[in-house]
Image (cartoon, rainbow, N blue to C red; front, top):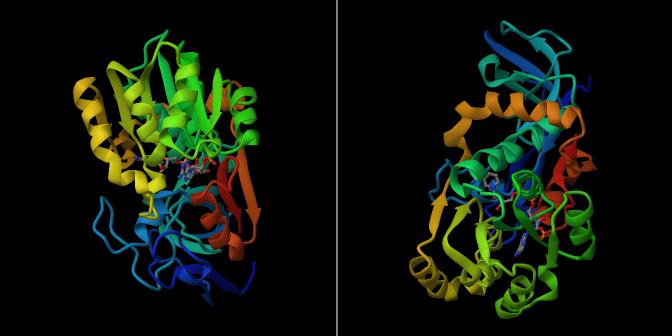
Length: 338
Ligand SMILES: NC(=O)c1ccc[n+]([C@@H]2O[C@H](COP(=O)([O-])OP(=O)(O)OC[C@H]3O[C@@H](n4cnc5c(N)ncnc54)[C@H](OP(=O)(O)O)[C@@H]3O)[C@@H](O)[C@H]2O)c1
């Protein structure tokens, strides 16, 4: 056990895509758990796109981080000391540790991990991103065999899970991903029927033409992960009564995508095609998490669902890795090994 706690704090509010100066490494004494609390030595923490929103002070569905506050995020680690019932030294647990080497959390905000699957899966395929895919595909995608689904960020933890669940439900699945290597992964590892490299198309019209070729029957479900050029390309290809689960718009997280200025075309397609467009935030659905684990964990243990993790070593590398993930530098679920 090291004698100091290290944490990455929000040093400055970013403008657009964050830069390393927006973060600061802080050190201090390792905290002591009070009654009902647990001290965790964090082994890994997650990096997720939603964290970018928390760095702004604009109002959103969740509170902003304060300057100086530890960057938010889920982590996993070993219990060093417990003052909470149900937790013993050495237990491997998960909770909202933040980007830090140690965390003290109330026992009722922690979960002991299932040892039959690798602990890091709790951050991706068996955690919030996998659960998001599992929940919202059924609830808002309403997939039917024979339909076509299109998804971007297709090799990320949300995209890879949506693609595999849709394929298992009998849909034609079309991936949009950044670069040849990710397109190959989408086809070979995650079983997509077709994959398009969005980086090869600087214009929405060109991307739309490429998509039209691999979606000969149109698009029934467009799972919205990205917004921007991709939304603009796909929406006119939607079939009547198509569904668009709106999960994320990462192309706009830095506020700079010029496609945002052309949104009226997209909204008109929503009207004329009578599309169902459902925004959702996974936090509203946590009561379904035990059912998700019960169904999906055995499939992960049996190797029936593929997943990919992109693990970078060193807490000090979290800011740069996070910045890279926001612009496609990750291949699979982004994780920091503290
Ligand atoms: N609503 C909810 O409750 C909820 C829950 C979880 C996640 N989300 C959202 O779901 C989306 C995917 O999350 P994730 O964790 O699976 O992320 P991820 O795929 O691990 O990482 C983000 C990916 O987005 C793609 N990307 C970034 N900028 C892009 C651009 N301008 N155009 C096209 N692609 C771009 C990149 O993939 P390529 O290199 O392949 O382009 C990048 O690797 C995000 O928008 C996230 O905010 C929402």
